[in-house]
Image 1 (cartoon, rainbow, N blue to C red):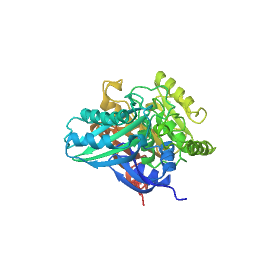
Image 2 (tube, rainbow, N blue to C red; image 1 turned 90 degrees about the vertical axis):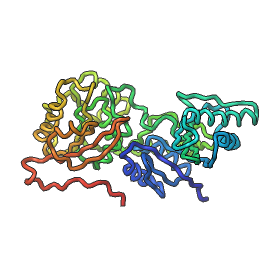
Image 3 (tube, rainbow, N blue to C red; image 1 turned 90 degrees about the horizontal axis):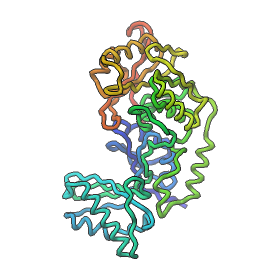
Image 4 (tube, helix red, strand yellow; image 1 turned 60 degrees about the vertical axis):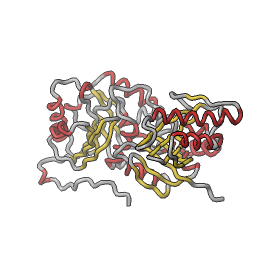
Length: 394
């Protein structure tokens, strides 16, 4: 029996679209297309469940369910009210709506959300006298409504909580890097899961944990208990339980050395707690070290740095701080590929090394650059290493 397929949209950070598309293809998705901060693909119910469990670079997985055109706010309400909302959920469930409106009769997205909510609530109330509740903090059902001019697209958010909430991070240091972003940057860098990996300003140990989960082939959402699709009318528990059970069995034994370190005692305690919650004690080596005095125990490897900046930086001379990063790369880590994410191009210039790769990305609301350096001994002319190529999806 042929399974029903439908369009699915996976959202991500700006700069990770190609990484996400390649990951989706690897998971078995078909007709994958890159979009702005997203990728679309074709899949069935099983693929929707699988991507929620396995995607490392997606923030949420949307299922488009309803599209229409309208010419006024009144017509918008009438069309929304006439839709069969009980095909998706029952009034015993709570729901919430997120909205985007561009060049629309709805100049206020809050009012768009309000009219959408009114239409859905009125549909249930006038049909059988009951109404679903609205829960903005932890809804069981989430709708995503996108309006562009006179066109409206309604999607069900199958993830619920954003997928960067893996479930292992119980504590966070100051301005921790997002889990999806950390995983996406590792994939963007092309780490082969064979080379030793260093995370020398580890903070919450997000780079280290995400890398270890990749190397162990652990499902990134394996710790999560809650997904919005569990509350859908067409939820298939047998299928979901089978997918989770299969994921729990696919863990290889050997992984490369992964070393997380920090000079801050509080960060060390947070990192240790998160590593323990992720079940990775013994898989990640945690050390208290000053990065600027550090030397690796491997002759080659890959290093990821999310250095502190602004109010997080305990120094009066931030330019000197970045100069020391460059000097430490060059003198202490020959043979390594080193990567750094930073929101300030004038500061990364102070590193004093020519990047072999450069990618624009966003860290929260910050416009950042992810730079990769090939560190070698001697002068540039003596190096025979070719620069890293960009991702090839062919």
